[in-house]
Image (cartoon, rainbow over all chains, first blue to last red; front, top):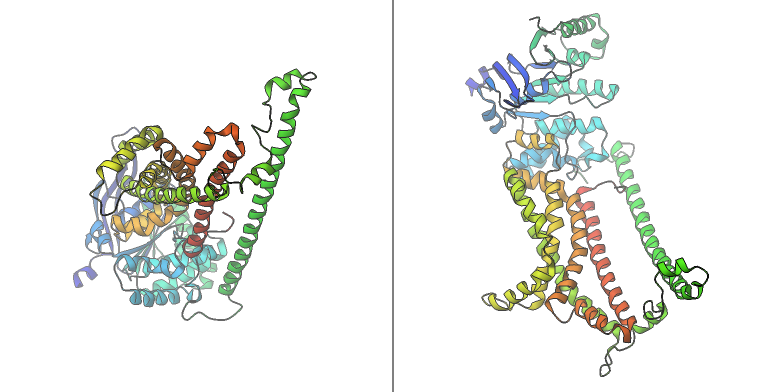
Length: 263
Length: 322
C-alpha cells in the first residue's frame, strides 16, 4: 500500500506510438514521450488537433498499448492498473447510456464490480450530492442539459473512488458559460476527492485555469514541447481576470507557437 | 421517485417532469392520428377499388374511341373484381353445402391456426437470430465467414425446404417428450424466414455503440459478457424492433406458404389454396380469405409495435418523435 502511494500516479518512459505499422498509411502518432504525473496532481495536456494528446491519454488508461516504451500507473503496468480499476475516465461526449436513469448510469461501474444493490444506491446518492444533482437520480440522460450530463459522467467516473481521473476534452462540447462553471466545479470536486487528474484540452485558458502544470505538445508526430508550472494558487472567479492568469495564458500560447523540430 | 428528491416546484427536476408529461400527451395524440389515417386509407382503398372496377368494366365500350387505352389496361368484371358489398356479404355465407358454419368463422379459425404457427416461428426466429448475431459479434472472422451463408440461405425457396421439414418432423422426432405435429413443422419453415432480419439487424445493433462507449466498458475492465449484456444488447433494441416488425409479417407469410407447400390442413394457406382452385364458382371467398391473411399480418405487426412502446417507455425512453 505504501509502495503504491510513493510511486507516481503516471510514469511514461520513452513512449512512442505508431498506428497501422508496416502498412502504407503508417502514422507516427507519438514520439519519445517521457512524462511523470505526481499523486494528487492536476495536469493538463494541451496541443493542436491531431497532436496525439487523446492517444497519450489512452496509453495511460491502458486502452492502447505503446509501440515502444513503458507506461506505469500507480506503479503497475497500464493494463494491470486498468484491470485493478485504478482510474476513472470521462470523454468529450458524456457517453451516458440513454436506457439507464442518471442513478443507474452512475451505478454502472459498481454493478460491473459486483456491488450489492444497497451499496450501489448508497454510493450513487453520495456521488449525486458531490456533483450537485441530488434531484435528478430518477431522470434520463436526454432530459438533462449538456453540462448536467457531463457532471453525471464525472460522478460515474469517480463512483468507485479511483485514485486517478482521466478526462479527454470533457467540456469541449459545452457553451462558454457552462464550461467555466464546470471548470470551477471540477476544481471543487478535485479538492474534495484528492484525486489525480490528467486533463486533455485544446483550450489555453481552460488549461491554465485548471491545472498545476500544463504539458504542451507539438503537432504530429506528438512530442512534448514544454512543461509549464502554473503557480496561481487557489482559483476563484477573479483568477480569470488577474494579470498573472493572462501571463500564464501568454506563456502557453508562446510555447504552442514554437516552430516544428525545435526541442 | 428518487429518495431525497426535493419537492421544490421551481427546480429543473420539476421542469423535466413537465417535459415528460408533455411528451406523453404528444404520444397519445400521435397514436390517435395514426389510427385515423389507417381507417381513412381503408376508405380510400375501397373507393379506388370500386372506381377502377367501374372504369375497367367500361374499357370495352370505350375501345372504339381509345383503342390504345383499351389494349393496355386490364378489364374488370364481377369475376376478377367482385363488388365489395358481395365480398362483405359472403362472410356470413356457409362455404360448404352440408355445414352451417359461415365463411367468416372458417377464416377466423384458419387464421388462429396460422397465427399459432406464425407466433412460434416468430419466437424461434427471434431466438435463433439474436443467437447468431451474438455469436458473430464476438469474432470478426466468424462474421466474415458466415455472413455470406446467412444471405445465401434466403435464396433457397421455401417450397424446397417444406417437404423436407415435414417428413423429418413426422419420422425422426418421436424421441421428444411431446408429440410433434405438422403445425410445428410449419412454424420451423416460418422460422427459416424470420431469423434472417433479426440476425442481420441484430448484428448491426450490436455493432452500434460508439467507440467511446466500448472504451468506457474496457476502462472498467468489463468482461465480454458484461459488455454484451450491459452495453451491446440494450443499444441494439431499436435495431431489433425494426427486425421484429419485419419478422412478424414474414412469419405470417412463411406460415401460409409453408402450409401450402407442405400440404398442411387447418390454416389460411390451405383455405386460400382451396378457394383459389374453385375461384370461378365463387371469387368472393378467395377475397375474404386473403383479407383474413392481410388482417393477420397487420395484427402481428401491430402487436410488435405495441410491445415496443411498452419496452421503450420502461427502458429506452427514446424521444416520441423518433
